[in-house]
Length: 501
Image (cartoon, rainbow, N blue to C red; front, side):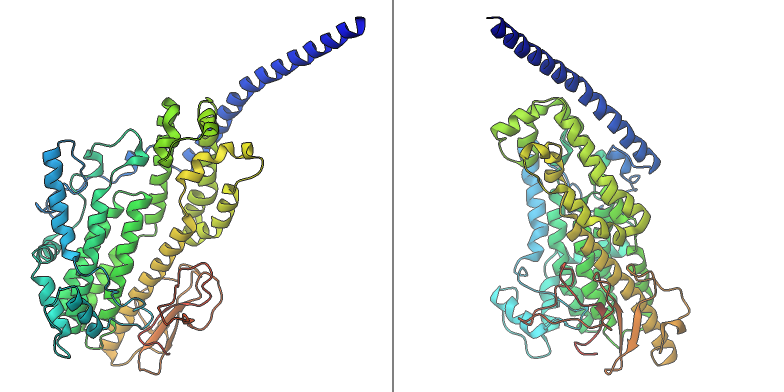
């Protein structure tokens, strides 16, 4: 009996110790998280990184001179609660989207900066099938027929006229004047789909104008595209940045078609150079990353007040039993907030601020490694929010870096072409150019350059593999344009006018 009593006393003692340890942990964990968050806030303050989204937005522009100050473009970002007003908005958007009707399968000379121009004959055949053109034009008349068909759609002339009279661009109403949801991750962006669909008609129209020798008309198409990209970037978060970079990358195909024309006069080269220079913005992705970071933190703050709904609201699905139990713990969201902020600061924001896109790209594998799940599953409690919220940043970084390098190559090409118009021949080396040239964002040195057998030239960067292949671009086995932004791409990032040097 005495032994039984001792055994029970031991069990009670163990149980009491367990309860004390548990109570201590419940007190210690919140305190530890509070100290951890204070350290994070100190790092953010030192790097001048805000936890609030709206202060990141640029000061609203005046309506005068705004590209989007037109009755067909005002109100595109809105989502009306009144069904009648929402119906009118949808009709307005459909009118704009209609400009792309029948152009969905047009490729716009994919790989043009690698020497693959648009095939107008094949494009015309496709447009006949889609009933954009009534019949196949005569050989050599395809560009004129495509231009006329696009200009017959009222939206295109409106966009071009707006581009001619505008000085800047911002969606109306501006982000700071729109009603924002309490859950910022659910920020509506119906205008971005419309803007994305307007780019292809403008680029195709510009390419047709280049083919016809109407370079000023093509420059107006580029201005419209530039204004749309500018408006996207003023809202500074990853979705708008992704749309902007897509617009700019598509517009570079039109830029290439202009620069590929030996007859392009200096009077067109100079405004083209000015348009491209306005697109140079090394801080754009950094601002977008800060915006997305702030959206994540404000979303977490909201969810700390409403923890019961966070899985369904963020992930768009019903929480599992285990997740429902986890989100009911008061310190789980604090744990997620700390992990999310540290991950973003360590592998995205601070590398971007110090080393630019190439520095952040070098950190992408480390970020992905920290996001990988571990066994047992409870070791991943701090990653739940980050795994949902943080996009595949490596792909976005590589896209942005490739575009930035192509933009710098296009600006360098403008200087080379201006030299040729002045001297009657191309420079044998870039050092002959008087103006300061943009650098290769990867090497921080001037681009590699050589004259080619077709009496033109080639510019190249070693690409993200860091190996200089003398401008070589490996061909795809199916004959398609090389996928230059893939992680396993091993060639150079090259600007050229023919497929062979």
